[in-house]
Image (tube, rainbow, N blue to C red):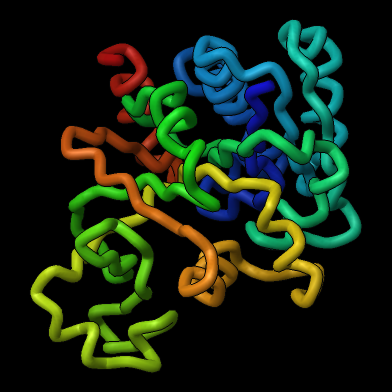
Length: 247
C-alpha cells in the first residue's frame, strides 16, 4: 500500500488575514484549497492512505474531508489540537495510523511542485529516508557526500553546522560534499519509528535525520529541473495559480 502524510497543522501566520478565519490548508488557489491540490496529486500517483495532521481550525479540515467523502481514499486525521508537534513530532504521533511495512511520503500542504511523486516513492524503497533536494538559493542547506548520503546541515550566514560535519569539520573540506536545498517533500520508512522512542513529543524531522544519518540510510535525491513553489505568503497566491495552470 502506498501511504503518505500531509502536514496541514501549521498556523499559516504568513497568510494572515486569510488564516484568521481558516486553516492554511483550506486557503484557495485556482478555485480549490491547497489541501485539494496535494490530495489529488497523491491520488493520481497511486497513494491509497493519507494521514493529515490538524491543529489550527482543525474542525474545518475534518469537515472538508468528510464533505468530500475523503476523495475516495483512506484519509485519516492525526489530531494535534492540544499542541503543535513540529514535523518530527507530527510524524511520531501519527505512527499508529500507518502500515508498518510501507514507506510514507511526507508532503507539506503549502508546497506545489512538478515532481513525479510516484517515481520518488519508488526510488525510496531501498532507503530509510529519501529527501527531495535541489540547487537553489537559500540560507540553510543540507550537505551530502558523493553517494548522496546525508552528512550534515549548514547555515551559510551564521556558519552553524549540524550532523556528522559538526563533529568532523574535515568533511567540509571534501570537494565532493554537495550543498543542496530541502524541498519539504521526503519519504520516511516506518523502521525509523524505533529511533524516535528516545525523542520527546515535539521536534523537527531534519534534526532527527541529522542525528541518525550516520546509522540510518538517509539519502538525498537531487531534482535538476525541480520547479517548486512555497505558497506561504499572500503575494504568492497569484503565482501559485499561474504555477498550477502551467503544470
